[in-house]
Length: 230
Image (cartoon, rainbow, N blue to C red; front, side):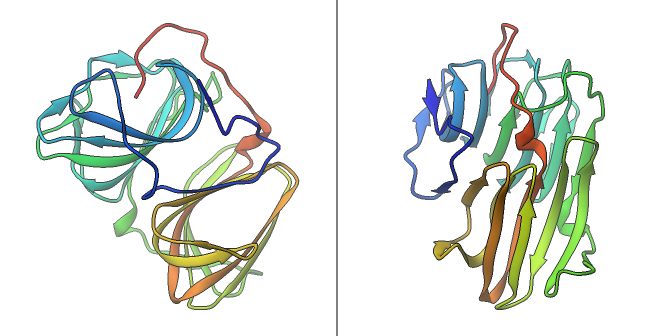
């Protein structure tokens, strides 16, 4: 299965408008933003767990990165409420589910194969700091290595936000609205800008809160192991 698999192209998807697709596990549905592969895939998705649903235990051969958008995500390692940002590196295992139900934004098979750094951060508790040279932008770093930088950013009302993106970028609107290159974005809009592109955004009148990853699109990983991904 290939969805938005040409990484040379800019892609804008409104996550609240994509149909839900059932997964092989009862009670777990997906909105697919990009995907290369079938059930084991390099993928970016919004995944919804119905109350009481439980995904089979599995290993993430290519790593898993996710944000809890609503509800409480759970596995044998703990409970992850709204605003949790989690990185489960390659070779980690778990049995995910949700007693009360939840929705997550999740990326699979996009880690450095040698990465073994686990991250659990509660974004709603982070203080953002004004970014030098970027008027109207305050940020907190969620993760950074030689491949990529992942940040939580707050854009002030009507701020003009510009970035040159040698390594490309992905952006998910968490709160508020904005325009990018003249196109409207709202909560759950996801944007992928290719290597060598530019971000040209204007925050909405109430400001905008976004998750943004830069640099990672220079690297394209593909599944090489059997397993069950979300």
